[in-house]
Length: 237
Ligand code: ADP
Ligand code: MG
Image (tube, rainbow, N blue to C red; front, side):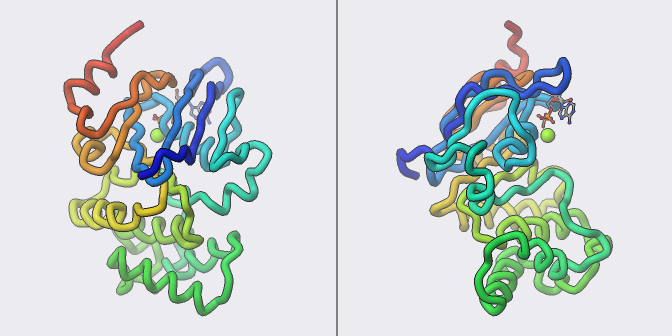
């Protein structure tokens, strides 16, 4: 980790009708950092990740990614970002490899040979090579998630946004994913939402707690405990 800010969020708000999904959130995430977003359901975690992933526009506020304004340079910034949604982006009737090839068209990837090599490498690292020709609909949720992660990583993004990647995964898939994140984190900035406090503590450098759209507190990993998080979830002011 360095001291360089990779994601700079300033006074970010998002309103849906009368509901504020995010209220005046300011946060700096550092280059090389694994940052976890904690918070109860409806606290704004997905909204924040979607805004960073350029899928949703903020109502107000500013985001800089490596010094570039997200609003002005969305196209360029999108090439740097890998976004893993809570619900899969994969086509269920296509195989894992067909899905990955389809999505790779949206990025400026060089030669076909290189692309194939990269797909094979990622399939191997996530231990899913033997299922690569199976339609997605025939696979368990854990395997589907791992194929979706290959899709997310195919253009070698510098910034990875993972929305509840561990939820409803079997223990084996969760462990493979956790190990994978640990191994590939170098040189990347990774933002992960979860409501699993123990898991957050085990994988992150820092974590931020969202409650009703407000960033209540930012913690170092070692300070994230069930008691400290619970106290913030329950605080009313
Ligand atoms: P989390 O991921 O922490 O559960 P979300 O970001 O999904 O929280 O939601 C934050 C708030 O914004 C919730 O009150 C939710 O109902 C609302 N919200 C999210 N997306 C939409 C939408 N597309 N339309 C209206 N309200 C939304
Ligand atoms: Mg969510």
